[in-house]
Image (cartoon, rainbow, N blue to C red; front, side):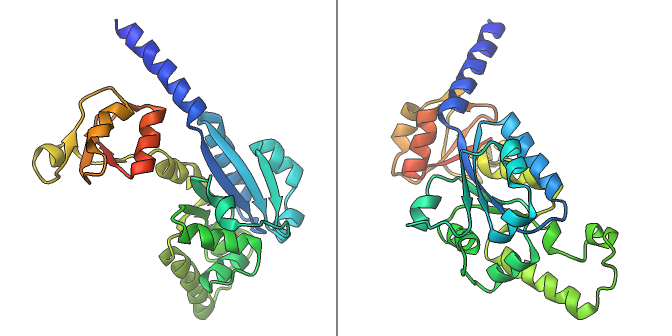
Length: 260
């Protein structure tokens, strides 16, 4: 019986992966510091999860990086080079569950900090934040005070210059960009993609959280239907499977679902 349950779980997970793949926009700027690490992180994520990428190259990024090598590594559905006309940025961004800046450059970080949406790259990042789409950026190339930069010989960093770079990144982070090291990129993206969020079971049962608890291993849209429009928090087991229709229901009706 346990073998049968496990087999059913595997089949359901395959169905979920097939019909509920996450679309991610990968932005490639001219940043080079630890870019190879970010690329490996994104390739590993695609290998482990059902992910589809679209890659946007900034003008400088398309000249500095090997475009063909990146395409081969990430196998994107679409490639966009900054300068290509996008009729409506909002419609372009709508399918994406997250925007990932593989290596945030100093130039791009400064433009974002000052809200300069003078090109497609910065406009996409700023508009994503305004639309509520999570933006995750590897900060290695934008922070010259790091060990990676010192290894390249950039060791003479005055107090004023150091503070200026730190202020730029602080402002970018205050706008909502999730900054991380390149070797943390996969973990950060996974944390954004695989909702719902987790709450401790003792908080649920102890009365510190209000809402309903669904004690099922597979949660369907039908299970969630009674809570539509009520504003209740719904709790499910940590390892419960949400069916594709349940995930659609959560997104459409903004139902708050948490894992215990």
